[in-house]
Image (cartoon, rainbow, N blue to C red; front, side, top):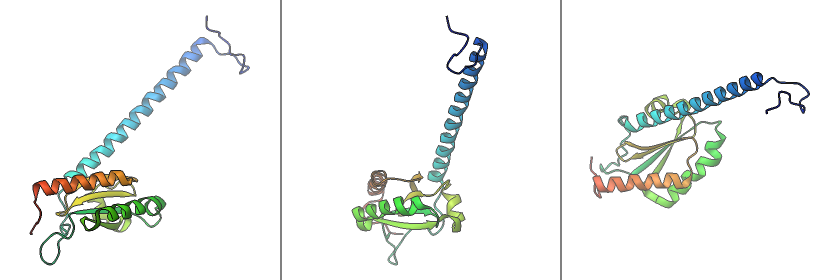
Length: 172
């Protein structure tokens, strides 16, 4: 039978006290799971809203000749005091540009001074990266640090989708 006293602690616990403590522990664990699940659903809802939003005026990135300057643009939201933005995300963005060359343009956005863009793309934290096609439509949103592989996959998917739907040259 289960002992009613715990000798190593020096005090005694009745079986009912142990059951109550286990019940509280289980309840706290369930509440924590619910909180994590709710947080994930919230972030996913924000991501879906950002991807479904129409592009802001002026986000179509064209040259003077009317052709798109680069097929993919990445908006990199950061702030002056964001160490992760400058020490981790910036080198990844440079690497993506090196690999894709003229096909990718990275635009740094200071989140505190661009509230309209922050609202448009439902930016929850910095760093946040938004992968856009040439017309300014969002194809991917990354809240927090996005590694090189993830961004390359998103850029490749955007380029592939654009080549299937648009063709080789787009004119405004």
